Length: 215
Image (cartoon, rainbow, N blue to C red; front, side):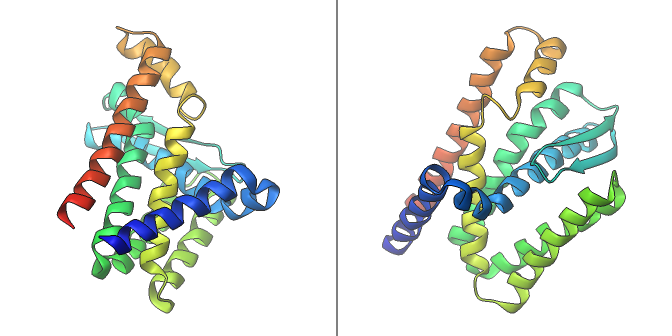
């Protein structure tokens, strides 16, 4: 348990320094995390459509960190919610595997790389988007197959993704929230924003509690 505490504290410290004190250098180092969050967000939309009987017609991940997913059919509410909460789930899964299941880390990186390659191919929107996803996938594959960094990389990517999502709660899902208010109703988008944030925060808290309790 002590080793996990130290690793988690070290990663939190590194992320905090880069995010809040790193300036342009920190932004550059965390750029892969930005792309990871965008991919997981868009992939969450795609999974929301597929799981509710819809189809995915395209996915775009842009160099500036923005993105979009074109879907048809399925549950509109689940598709919209799948971006923010789906990426929170996937980030927590990555972090959990990296922290607890050493033997699965390189397989998880390879699966993640495979999803990026398939997404860029099957849901092609532009050569830029597909090129970014394939380049990221190649780096993850190299780390998984040729280095011993797979566990720390997976854990850091998962942790940084979750932290990024929580910090970005009032900006990242803004358009999704506006449409969610129209589709679902009940509350204004600002209330839904805090509901989604609470769910993401509770999921991360439960993840940490589960990790430290079992260890």
